[in-house]
Image 1 (tube, rainbow, N blue to C red):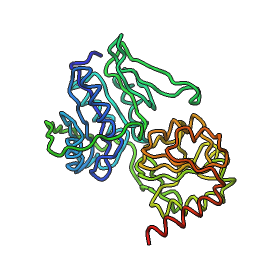
Image 2: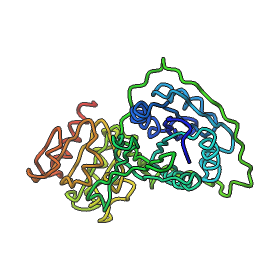
Image 3: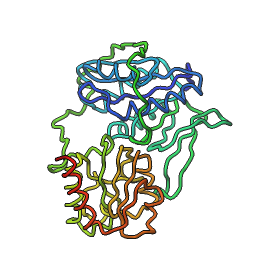
Image 4: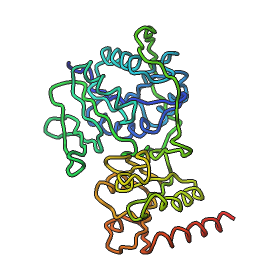
Length: 334
């Protein structure tokens, strides 16, 4: 399939009509790639009552916005969204598509690529333009994160990739910007949709886990010593209004569920503040949180690799340091 234009599309995932962070994040690298390709930056919104998502997409830099707004898209279903997206692509044939590597994106993107008979690079952590071929250079971890692979799709269009949430930061919104909006009337017959949403579960137990959207994350690693070691970490997170994270070692040990894992095999995050407690700093973990604005490391080993990227380091026993931090935060709040 040949592209009709040099446009780059970004799928803007929505929740209750609002744009989720991952799509707005992708408009930032999407802008640079679209300019390099010589095309427009196009936001694609599929959902119900998505006026707020349209405003956000404008503010974060989209040139054009393609909107499919109908009741059958109120909640994601594979059949409805893939059918609608395939119809849109076959009409305009862009050269590239960026999709967030969320549960929705990971379900939709491979099916879309199959329908369009093109390639897909999944779980990317880097995007650039290959100078020799002018294709997008998709960078993703391979072999358990021990090396980074650079992939191009030279022969088929559109080029499609899913990108991990939190890899790129959102640009500052400019609400004076206006995009050209194209509303598409696409109706998916009910008999085409083979699944039905029964219930949405946002919580794991009693704890909300939203690492990608968190502004403050307090993470624990092997150094916490066991599942009970996460109790002071949860208390510190609570007084800071933070989300609890974890290293792979703590998750593999069964001390905390996988939903909390930060790193190449977990979530990629970029909060304003990341506090690493008892985390040595394996390269796989660093790759998932090095984009944080401020990193505070607490570890009793002064030679721990985490200190090399930390903005502030505390050498000490977390069982003594964390309670002291909790007390200080409470005093400041009072």
